[in-house]
Amino acid sequence: MGQNTGDSDIVLSSGVRTPFGDFGKSLREVPLATLGVHAVKACLARAGLDAARVDHLVWGNTAPVDHESLFMSRKVALAAGLPEDSAALGVVRACGSGSQAIVSAAQQIMTGHGEIAVAAGGENFSRVPYLAHAMRWGAQRGPAELVDGLDYIYRCPFTKELMGDTAETLAERFGHAREAMDDWGFMSQQRAGAAMASGFLARQIVPVEVPDGRRGTRLFEHDEFPRPQVTREKLATLKPAFRHDGQGRVTAGNSSGVTDGAAALLVAGRRAAERAGIPAQARFVDWAVVGVAPEIMGAGPVPAIRKLLQRTRLTVADIDYWEINEAFAVVNLHAERELGIPRDRTNLYGGGISIGHPPGATGLRMTITAMHHLADSGGRYAVISMCLGSGMGMATLIENLQR
Image (tube, rainbow, N blue to C red; front, side, top):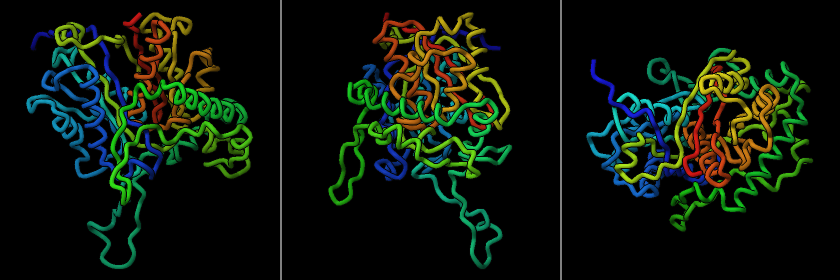
């Protein structure tokens, strides 16, 4: 066996993302590879790093789209200027695919298979095709059914329920009220609005040129999904989106938005970062992934965070900031109640409900947000966590190096 010459001290730097586009709006004509390349190039430029120094790119994605599809990691890598002898890897871990891109990039370095990597990922749900399964072998005459490819993304492979139905089960089983879920949704929108107004979100966004009808193109600069003008009263009037028996609690206002976008983050061994002049902004400390019952997949962050804290010998009180993905508001309410996570240290800049949730980019966006918050506040540790469709939870821990 070869000798492990890897660097176990992993640093993160120069994270960026595109604006997130609302479903079917500004990014629907932009190929996913274009978004990925844009994010990776901007990440390298922010670090002042020649793409030739990067030896690995890991790409997180859940919905294959466009012709590149399964080859997206390699397409993005070479089109962004990485050398031909660099390696590329695509990863899928449901809603944690962006975080898994970071983990897998770190693993390459820790095991001595690379020194500098880019963790990237994204989705363009607006470009997911409809599928005609019968066309290849059986549709000889008559109508053929088209299946929405997004149904593969949003439906549990075990219960065959939509993910929103599993959120309803979590809310019912653990007694989370509709009013509390709407309160969280309203808070998310308000926080995102404030983060947009203050320029906090603009610090992580690299605008992208998008088609603009007869006018050619325009610069798409800001997240398209946030609705900070929505009122609490309006949220209360929304009908349940998944259960229509009079008992539903999950609505469009307390669920994550369907959005498009890409993100990228440099992952490097500390020694290699020093040699290359990469600004070491945060240290990637550890991660944990656990399974939960698929029908309550939204409970996943709780055991994942518990395992991560146990592995690192930390407590909830030791964590200065939390980013827990707002797949549904009930996910955050459940983690808050079960773990005692303080709301004034969680998702301070909005989340999946307000900014949106493209799974390949979400974990990266959350990590970048946590890095910026720690740098601004002088805090030491942040935890990034999310539930995963099919019944898992994931959590990662980063440490601020800019204190």
